[in-house]
Length: 155
Length: 383
Image 1: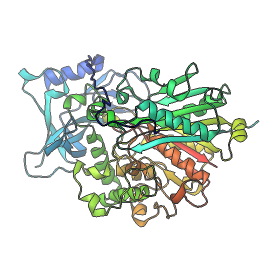
Image 2: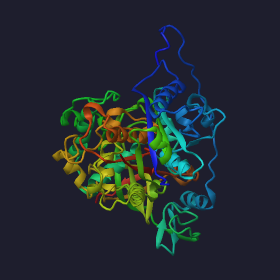
Image 3: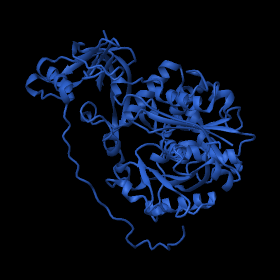
């Protein structure tokens, strides 16, 4: 379209932003999952007997067979690094000076996404074990942030 | 009467990194006018139903579908919006025509990405609000982790991924609608800044503004109106689990599934033999290789090798993203799948200009909705 001869000084756009605040209900399975993290430093999965699959984080139902799940399993706090990345941008899109490492740690047949740190000088590799590091109990409030990060086990 | 469905008109506006003088409605209007003119239809008289693909947060307007009828000629006509990629919209248009209730349908998708001032926040808002979003991680991490595991499992190299960038951005130089054409060396791609290691910024498609409209018709109207109807031979779509914790980090199983669906419909048993060229998702360079393998053209780990050998170049045996792909044309958000389909249509019509492929009769278009999604679609088109 060439209808418009533009005047560079003319106003060209309106700017606005939106206020959005939501509550996200954990649900029956999520509430128990996060309570176990908060109260017991435990990571729970739920097991499907049909599919022989342990969902982590625990889910109320099996997404493969639609079975309702009520068999709870403590899957421990150590899992394997399935994949990881060194992230060079912040949440808002701005550049980071130093990257942060993010990983998917396998627990049961699922796992958790979290930050990964290495206390030694060993570089992160796929397949290495990593352990969940929890906040002190007085600071835990029942969220994924009750886990500070996962720490690489290098010995 | 046969009940084939065809694309009989295409129109687009753009594509440009910024369009400060045009509103999104004007971009859509221009693309729609061109598509209706190309199809030889009057939207007020002939087009019986309208579809857009759009996402409220991309548009900055709630209930955005309310804002789409006027610029498409759809006022007081059946009109609805799909929250999906453009190829999901094409599947919907196909089904609408197949109902027999509508003989001509218009489909539109667009991007006014330059107006999104906080895009990182929008994709972050698509993360699981309880499990992932509290970590406050830029959503590109999903692509970085997927690329890392894909390389690990298939033996694909970072150099092979970078080769996709070199190829697609060079292809874009012969596409006048593609703003990101460039002659880059492998080193220039690899030495660029990291985004989410092993993924580099130069392996990531930049956003672009533009709009695309397609006109879809039943066989009777297609044969009456068009000299070169492009037939929809198969169209499939699929979603994996949305949970990052439940998905396969190495192979795009939802693309495999969507492809099976489309191949079955098109009667295709050996995709590589049956299909002449493909336009596939390359929002991140590794995705082109991963997609080509999910589509069954190559075995896991082979796509990178054949790309290095030149097989997927424009003059290779199996050209991929001759348009320049998203790396060369830009990331059109919800309209990416329509950009892929548009190129397949132009090639099958023989009107692709300097980048025209010789003797092509069946082409494939494939799309992905981007991070953090696990959904995609596949369309097989023939002339």
